[in-house]
Image (cartoon, rainbow, N blue to C red):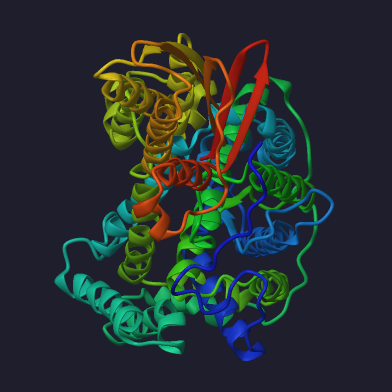
Length: 575
């Protein structure tokens, strides 16, 4: 197990996880997140209309969903009692849950849909408890692929909205102009303005873009009328739609729970990566607590009749872009969500946001998330097995629409897997990774003859194993350098001779890499002290002292043991 390492503050972060921004800034940041999350929380409206709800019941459904979102973001920031990742990770409704929820509505109404949502939460609780034992199924490269697909998904949805597709603005240049102006404001403030301008660049883009849309009559008057006619205050009615179960729907909702767990894994990876400049791989314990928080959120949604929630990659990307990732904002945002649920006109405002304005925000945030995923992917060495795993999963994910068109019928139980490009990508990658682990060795022993070409043989072995393991290139480079120095030192001290055979054994898991070099004879002396520069020129043995010092510096831990005329030198590296 890797040693605990304190996170390193990233460049560009103005207020870090445990820092407290001024209250005025915190409130404005929470309002910015409310505006963003509200613009993509469309599932309650669609589900309510599918169930034939009247305007009052639909408003109550939206209000209960807001309360659920408020509870979720606070639980995720909690990091107490095994609950929450301890990071600012807001939640929103997910399209992955829609097919199964709609099927439940058609069979037994909203009460059945909410009852079955409890299954989703229970699956996530179980996934959170089991994840530390299943960490081998989620290596860093799959985490990177998940984050990349999150960003691509956000960006593609943003592009659809920016172009006004499937809306009255499709094909209208004025709609494109409004979206591009909003995007230009966001980018301009984020890139060229420091301080508050960057922190509130998205909010400013929303305000400017929506103001233009209202001035140019791009918002239907009927939608504005609904805002004016909404009751100024109304207490949400908890559990209005009832609660029931149908075991025949269990497989579909179990798969929904797994799909949302994969999404949560990816979003929490984004949040961890954004808050640690020295990030090396997912903190599985933190993600496990995050899954528990999301599972409890969805059980709460089931009980009070709010719509299923999942961690929002867009909201995390927005926090990353603003440079403020304080947990304090999470608690203010959660409270604000719960408070605004009592004011129907506020919830109605979300329905009048112009599609091109929403598209500008999603396109901007998607770029941040997608590039974070690429950074994670390119930080690892890949062999053919990993290339095939990632490549096939990526192609299937990007070709999700073509798959849905090409396949005549998809079993209803598998609909959640195909519901989003992200769920299809991650499920494919995990299954292929599991398949390709067959025949892949975490432990390997190899004998090397110390002859003229021994360096090439050792280096080829180490880099081959590095690609198979998916290790970071800098770790493999350190391992190569240290092993070469060690063999040179053994030759220099006369502990092995040319033509002798040494045994090299390696072991790798998701966090650590260990090389054991075994030879017969006396133990090698590894000096922990750097030799004086003058001594290197005057004393022949000083070069051996330098080699020992370099080995101790290159490896995270070094141990030399001697038993029965056999010496084992163990070099340990953290990946």
